[in-house]
Image (cartoon, helix red, strand yellow):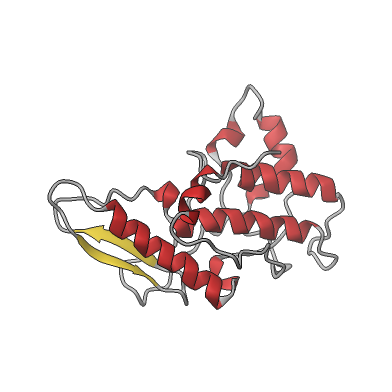
Length: 202
């Protein structure tokens, strides 16, 4: 399945991340993925509910967020995020008042003066786009992890599930955005909703 990663190309224009190899450190724990994208609950067409249910049931159990990446990768993503914020600017006559990204926690914010909003759209925030891309890679890695818990019994179905539920939404309106945005530099992000995708379909 083709991955819809159009928004990631925008990130590369500011700071290419040469270190973005597919992570192999997804932990074999209880399923804790982002919630299922809106299109997965359609009742007709290519993304019929029955198909979504079948795919979701093949997702592997794992946890992931960007803090598992190397320090250099996290720093590059943060540098891109603050650059995007500064370039996007604010609506009206507003000015950027908060523009930070903490490479230790990956918490970020892009805020404008009172009465104006940042023009930075969530789908092109590098923290969000790279989370989607690398979360998908971690999911695919877990499909082939012999220590996965629960065990993966069908690698092909598992990979299809990762590509469908996660990868195919990256950079699209169906991407479920992670929760890295925080009020202050030292705040710890929520990272993502503590939901199991398979439970959403029961």
